Image (cartoon, rainbow, N blue to C red):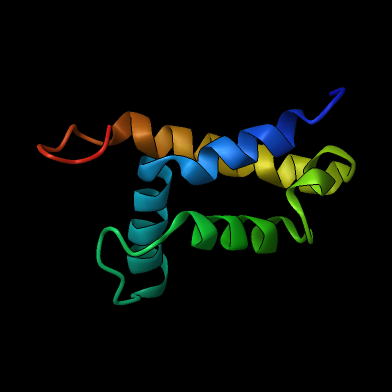
Length: 93
């Protein structure tokens, strides 16, 4: 993709409160971590995403083919989780 498509999408994703909720719940399920809902901040989400994609900055998602593929995988997993998630009263939508 031309431009900064993945970098922009990553920024939007990290600002999404539902994505941060996904990270909270993922940490509990996958790692039995004591992470209450609302724990991950936008900064935490960005740090997690850069580590998961093995990049130093979001801009690398557009230039590093492997990192871009990992980012798309993360997006797809999140979107599947979000689609299965029942609407919770008072939860971010």
